[in-house]
Image (cartoon, rainbow, N blue to C red; front, side):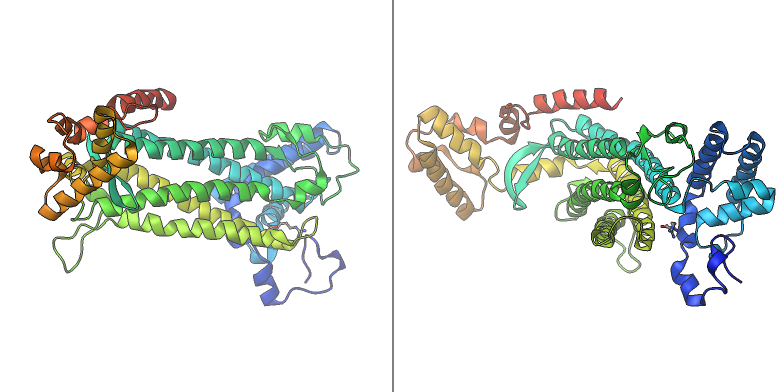
Length: 459
Ligand code: ARG
């Protein structure tokens, strides 16, 4: 038998494989609540504009609530033959209330319906993600607050560069995640327009009120062009772009946690709640959460690429290709939330090992730049010459197997006779970081200022 929803011109049913490739109910049932919200808004509008009777609209409203409760209770039977969530809901509604259900689809198409449902879903996801992202930022700010003046090595090329503070390093990530937060809010604002009432592609001859349904669903306005409304998925791509960049930041932090928690670094101890043991090596405490997070990020990038490719060759307006938008976004959204939550937990629970950080900061000639700056400031050497003298002293220390502050004054004076005892002040890592008072610099005083600003911004 042919399809009850659209089978008027069809004599028979679908091939089984056709049914399998055509159906989206296996995944788009996640939009059930959004689909029912959209239908309720549509039915109420149809009654307000006199297109439906109030009695019909009321029967639809009640019926939709019943369908929703069946879905929430897990008693709803999803049917692959009914393709997608839209037809599953409508078919059940028809079984429940009969005739009025068949009037619900007036002035509407599945094309504007699915675009509306999906926007509502992505919007909900933005809202949930916002809070989780803020929680992670708060955990990072708390770490920065505790260790505003803890000295650690700063790296370039993963080689010791200059001493920095733990707080400064934590706040670097807060800055990155704050831009993600701003991208999130920006994307949410831009996508918040209603496709509902664009109908199949051209609009409708019924006197519908799209402003009314837009408002009822919390949209800022109806989409202004019906062709655009049913045919673009840039809102989903923008969500994936935000997610990809945020995921990239998460992955870099995860990578640092993996390195820092190793026995060779010992910069941090991850808590038992976020690590696992080995079944053969009793000493192991593996940073699995950080590793998995780092790996899961790849799926988010994959989703971004996959959906861009789905969309790039489609002529206007709707093509069935676009049904492939949802799984990518669902998977990316789920994994982004999971990664953000795992990172928030790891950061909140981890302990920085202040002593190891300091010891590492003091090794590797990390204050060589301070020495060169001192030669410029105190002896008036041109920076290039100071750089050369310092390089020679580094080579000397390296040859002796010691650090710069371990050289004697005589050894230093052999490289430049003007050097005095005062040089030793700048070779200490605490003095080094304290001197980096330029705006945005790593000095503890600067870090404390920024911690305060973030605490206020996030409270
Ligand atoms: N399940 C479909 C999708 O996700 C709904 C829209 C179907 N529209 C159509 N013209 N066949 O895209």
